[in-house]
Length: 164
Image (cartoon, rainbow, N blue to C red; front, side, top):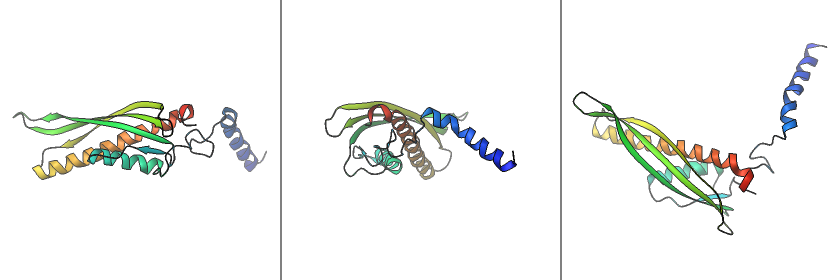
């Protein structure tokens, strides 16, 4: 067998397990999450964190003009001082956040799925008050990106059971 024949054979052999398992890309036409793209509408944002979360969800799934699914969510965050000097001054904070969500059928209002995502990020408080506020704002935006990633991943992974 020539070298190019062997490569073609190995490529076909490598793809055989995927063909046998019925693998379909999630967002492909007819894929399990295809209806999420442009079909999920989160509740309107009410504050900066919810604006950032909704913006990140829409970046991943698109904006729904005529939604098939409506998503309500609740964001909770809190900070914990983690870097403390010998004089009890806090120099670093952990920002911990959770988003719980419920997805409903837009036509019937029936609950289709629900879940939560949680994570944390940190920011420095060692600089000036202005730089600390800037770092806190950036940490909040970063946390909403992380939570949106987790939330969308959960929706895509479970879409085959509810998003039909």
